[in-house]
Length: 544
Ligand code: N01
Image (cartoon, rainbow, N blue to C red):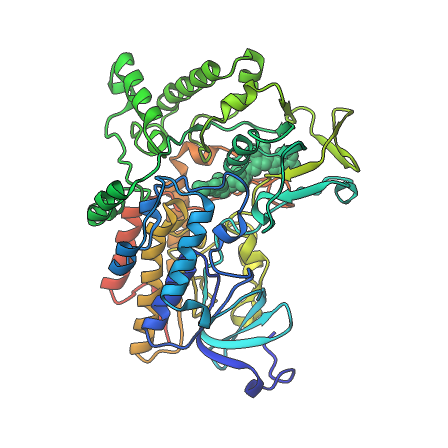
């Protein structure tokens, strides 16, 4: 609880706004808060800026979004200065970009690094948030903005014997800063989501022996990456306005435009040609530029599912291994599609083994490796590509308490409840960037994230200029928005599938049932809902 008796308020640093998180969107939020003329302190658990790109340094980590759509659009100077060298930039390049932004706008002077926030408590008498860090230090502010990242809490399953392993082990999302040497080593990878796929196809080139432990396979599709030379970069730069406009008009914030036809409307031959073209197109085209009923109609989904299954069979030499790599429990694109570059061909290598842990789960980690189905496997390195406590993990790690000491974790125990994914009733002056149920949660993050940041910034500006000291959504707004989020989710096949999209994480207690964490109503509808709030003088919010 907020307790002046423990630390005299004069001893606690005070700011107008406290921001947690300095990933791509956190950095932009910091810039915007400064522009409001507010004193801002940002706390960052990492040793530097970059968020996702700071932590995920595993070999092969790269964008699945076109690099030039992932860039900040607010500064023409920045757009003029930064060159991408690949259509889908690798992590080191992206982190360099984040550092360039931090240097250019001198952001680090307002950021405290290695500063993990453990609690945030609202003081109703003073309309202030008090933040406590892991080292016990505190800070207070009128506004409390969270840019925690939707996938920032790595999860390692609590396998029996996990600490007994004598070799090296790493989680993809907590990768060491010093390079891991795979040459001549026997390596295990557990997990075949987007991270596992990128890692596997990369380290397979250098390992002595690789064993992939796959529970449920995913539908992977070619990234079709290519370098960008100086001339092409200049052409891209000249088109930035057009590129951003195209992303803005799309429902997912990408340059890929959905095919307005139903899959069943065209002949089988034409469908095949469309699928083939999409399979050869760079990026998420096959997911986002497919026939518009692909993710709402089972028959339409079956067409593309069958096409990609055929592709996998055509790329993997051993038919039994190919069958093991083909998902049987969900259709194409109803979970996040991992983008790959030679992933399936890895399983044609003599030094690569695929072990299914679907029927025979990993029993335990042993001092020399791991045991599955009574068989012991020996390794020098174990990689956990086992994913994250998505959307909720970062919030649950902080003891956030609003009016009357209400805990956010308890309020969200069943499902998140928010207004526009930006604010929560009973938690005044707390604003979320890419929180659960924002339009940005199911979108190309920087594109929709920028809009999310601008909405938060405008809401704070409005509160300040009107002389209010508190803003929070009305309970009615929160109920209506939460209902709307659930209603739009019902139509999608994605919400009938287990994945982090639907809040499933079998490694975490209480996460075995599906819940709606993302806003699937589309970026344009979300923008309209936000614009309506601005136009109505924020009618869904309560000010004091
Ligand atoms: O995590 P995941 P991720 N025993 O949750 C398996 C983003 N991203 O880090 O499917 C055995 O997708 C689990 O198996 P199952 C992107 O949004 C972006 O790969 O639960 N296996 C699954 O195979 C992505 O969606 C980019 O049966 C276990 C894997 O671990 C998100 O991050 C690149 C297990 C986890 O897959 C998360 O991807 C990479 C257990 N006990 C990621 N527990 C870019 O665009 C878990 N698994 C750059």
